[in-house]
Length: 145
Image: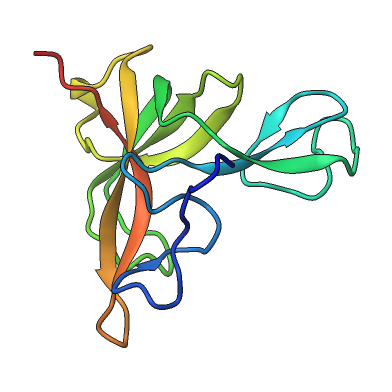
């Protein structure tokens, strides 16, 4: 992780859907890991490399940009999901060489295409029982001027 990168704290007005997945920075970044033994990145961060089983992994801030690899629309809320539907769901290939399964901000599959440039955003998913916005990450199409 680069110096100065922030993660959500317990004192934030908002809470992350899960602590340690992404930064609370502008732009936000996914928090993954990098194996010092084999050099592969992974997400989320694990103490043991999922590629070579080395215990020599370190936290790594991943790219905020990626390319759309696969996508669909979720039209019915999965169990436990409290956010709005429909929403996009897809796979983003990051420059670090890994593919991340993620929510997409665009719910209409017809507006998406293979290899489309995408960027990471954070968005409110729902409000918890204590009235705090719960924030998750998603990838959005890069607007072409």
